[in-house]
Length: 413
Image 1 (cartoon, rainbow, N blue to C red):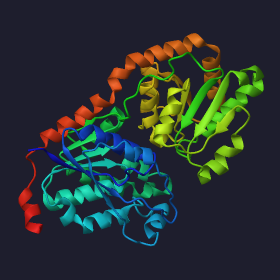
Image 2: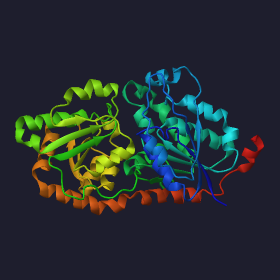
Image 3: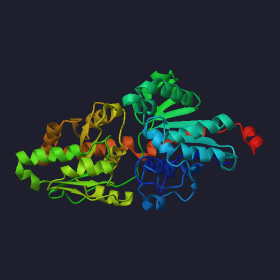
Image 4: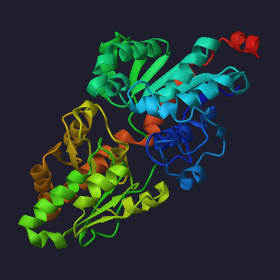
């Protein structure tokens, strides 16, 4: 009998970008081997939050997926306000409450639970269901929950968030993390059995290499992603302006294209730095972004805060998949170490405008460097292929078969 897996994924298409992408690709890769029921949120606008809709992601869903979209409880925006004030660990707890209220209808048949962080509400729902029904639980950390939640003044709550995180992790049958650094931190932080925690790199769609007909003139450097203080992608615009002010002839050699939502952060912090040679094209569907990546010569990624040193942004793996040499602004950590160890691109220290400009200059002026980076990307690509990462989840979920305690579910039903 086919194994049933409940995939708890608040953010799922038609939500555009962010963790919705990760959840989409994970679900699609697992749908051939399991009866996968996705429990997600019905997309709607919040009091403070607005969401981009990406219909191309819905069209790309595996036909065997069962998708249950649950409308969040009406809390009048209180959940968002309390999260913004630092008093709640997630702004989707009203959705988690709505799912819990419908647990009998949604989860009466025995199966394994699979929850991906972010968002915390996914973990909260899955853990509560594990406690109630005894279903085995696989928890995946794409981010460091207690580390992220303990930034700024909220460091006073670090003990609380770490205890909460530890309770969730100790209840899981298995844990996966996005990087080796995060895996090691979780093991040390909560004294976990190392055999219980493994690494699964970010999953992206399978794609052919990018440009097949030579390079663009000028070279196209693409950034498609979040416009927020976590990335602070305006550093690329500052570096470009610094470079062409000192070497005006390079303006004809490099064009910078930004794609993403026109967020308040973009209007305040990014738009003022757009100069000739840099263009903002607005939000594109993921299918349209893929087309831009296929025609890119270089790709940019950034992280501005050292608290995210453990992270490896999804676009890093998209650049690997499409064999696009990278230029990055990163703190020391997992993403920087991966790029430098495998020779995937050039990296400047986070916040170092002149250092990033120097990287741009090298990439503009040294075609042999670009060729070498593309060759290194092609060699590294098999290690990070989506199928290889999804196979790790398949093996874990298959090993959890038979661990359910169905009498608990039947008793409630």
